Image 1 (cartoon, rainbow, N blue to C red):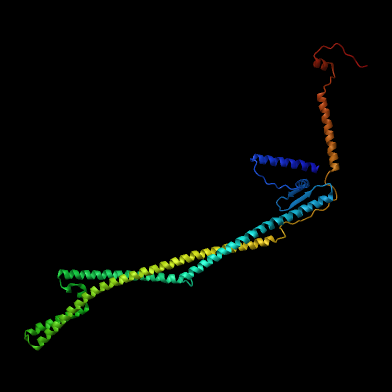
Image 2 (spheres, helix red, strand yellow):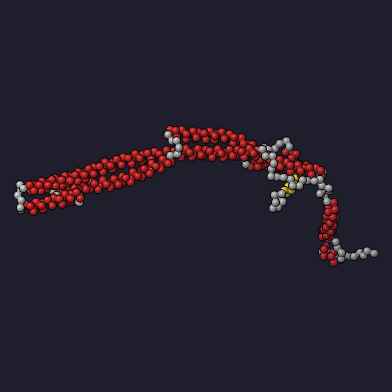
Length: 378
């Protein structure tokens, strides 16, 4: 019976596969049949696999007229499943190992090229160690020069403003003593006080002494000398204001040039730092990829050597002491009960189909003709 079932099931599956290929447009199908496909289908028709509810345990049963063969086939199916599980781990691991081994060569080459590029760039730019510290120092120098330039610009504006005011006083023809830097100068104040004192002495002694008196000549000489010193001091103040403006401009220009050069240095350092950072990221990325591939290669290498799986046989199949089917007593009881029901049903059916006449009235009503006579059974 099993062989006949497998024969018809194989035919049905082959016809259904042809229909499916025709329905999909006659495309190419994967042929996985072998010389043992019919035998495998005939053997597997009696295999029963039932998973237990809320458990990872699976029960394997096999039906056969030979109880030894039934136990043997159940155990062999379990062993074949374990072997297949191992191959499902080892075979892909073997293929992955070969693929990762080929990829590691290219990844190693990429890593070496990235490291060589970083080394060549550092040698070309003369970079021995990290430039982070130097970049911070040069950036701080830029900030210092910027602050100095701002101070110099403010000083230049003040000096130019003083020079402009001085020029306005000179152009207006007013006395330079009205110019605040000259008026507030302590040396000028001291000389002016000395001049006032000498003028006071001359005015006091001129009433009693003549012009040619030695004291008068001495006072006039001292007054002339003080006046010369005052003029000289005023000239020095004017020249100092002019020189201060010129020096301030020169200092401002020098600071601007120094700041421009320093900014160029900082920008070059930043460019080098960014370029090194990019190359380092490439090296780190190549290193991380290589390490990940190497780790995966080690994992697949270990998996390809696995000869165990997480599937195990909890309880092997034993040779049964008695057959499971057929159950004779149950079958006899069911047959007797079914025969009784069939007999009763057949009798009722015959009674309904085959009509019998029991009385004269039933005959007249059934035939609808008059009754001529009645013969009695003596």
